[in-house]
Every structure is written in structure tokens, then in C-alpha cells.
Image 1 (tube, rainbow, N blue to C red):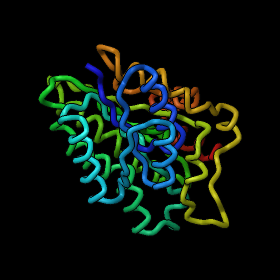
Image 2 (cartoon, rainbow, N blue to C red; image 1 turned 180 degrees about the vertical axis):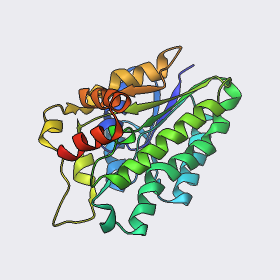
Image 3 (cartoon, helix red, strand yellow; image 1 turned 30 degrees about the vertical axis):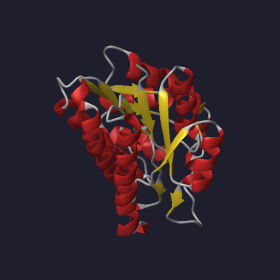
Image 4 (tube, one colour; image 1 turned 90 degrees about the vertical axis):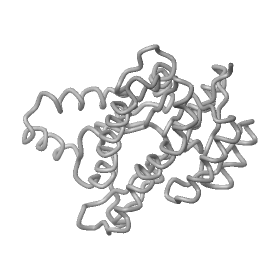
Length: 258
């Protein structure tokens, strides 16, 4: 039986290359994005599409109902990939911006997963995969709100994994570092006159979105998926430094390279 995977955030970057790769590997891919133009673009590429805005409760509910109808209540994979970043010093970010950051990066993901679990649990198999970030491991000045949403996503995913133990559904996190994608262009800058940019050292180690694909394939297809998949050298190094360095030393390092 052909396995169906739902991927959120397929307009570009990780979501788009993942949708193309998984379709080539024989999966039935349901691709979501927010904007009508992006939906049209995906349809022209031959994808089954669903409109989904994770910041809108009604949109999430409607999308989940559509997935259940399209799949006959049988979904194998859920790749929670969609999200965006709010950058700026904490003192410059309003409560509304903070809430919207969590709404898109965590609350919508929770709601969607909650609504789709009934299409996965009865079948005793499945994979739920989240696109986290190196900012789910460490934080730097001016990226605190985005990092907070990814730290929370990591905790949510860890809890979900433990709660689904024995169900046949495996839960994993993909933790990219810097990638070439539209993410940076879509960042919401809290201070437009002082935009936050990636440091030069990160730019030297930036990879294409395709770097995620081997990790995603393993998370979907290995009998024993890993809990976390760091992607870039930056992600691997920072994950190691977080475990080895005293907090104040790590603070100094991250301050100097932010």
C-alpha cells in the first residue's frame, strides 16, 4: 500500500524539496502552504495540495478534516515543517508578535498533530517529524523569540515521543543550521532599521535545503528512527559545545559571533 505523508510549508525551501523527493520515492505527498499563488504553483508541479495557515485555528481544523477525507483516515507520515522567524531584541518585540511566533511555530503544529493522530494510531505505524533549528539548541542575541519557539517545539516533541511509546509511531526532530532558503527573506524584523543578519562564520557553512533529505528519509524509513537529526556542521558543532562548555563560556562565544 502506498504510504501518505503530509508536509507543511511547501512553498519553498525544505518543504518543497522534501515534497519532490518523497514523491520520487513513491510516497503519496499532500503538500500544504498558506498563499493561493503558492498553492497554484504546487498544483502545476502535480502535487495534491491543501491550504493551511498554522496561525489560524479554523484553517488548521479544515486542513486536518481534508487530510482525513483524502486518506480514508490512514496517514503514515506527518512532517511538521512550516514556520517562520521573528528577529530583534526582546525589548523591541510586542506581546502580539511573541504570540504569533508561538502560534505559527508551535500551537498550530500541536493542533494539527492532535487532529491527525486518529488517522495514525489505529494502524500501529507512522512517523511524526518536526523541523526544529539549531536555535532549538542554543540562542543568540536578537533571536530570542524564535529560539524560544524552537526550544518549546523540542520539548513538545520529546513529550510526544514518550507519550506515543508503544504505539508504533516514531517521533523525530530535524535540526538544521544555516540553509539557503527563503526563510531569511521571510524573517519578520522587529526593527526594520536594524535588521538581524547571520554572522559571516555561519554563511561560510550554509548548505542547500537538499541537505535535509538524507535525514528525512532516515526518519521516515529506518526501523529505528533517531530522536534528533542535526543537519549542518554548525548544528553538529553547537550541539556538542552546548554539552561540553560551561554556560558562561558558551554565552561569550555566542555573543561574539551574533
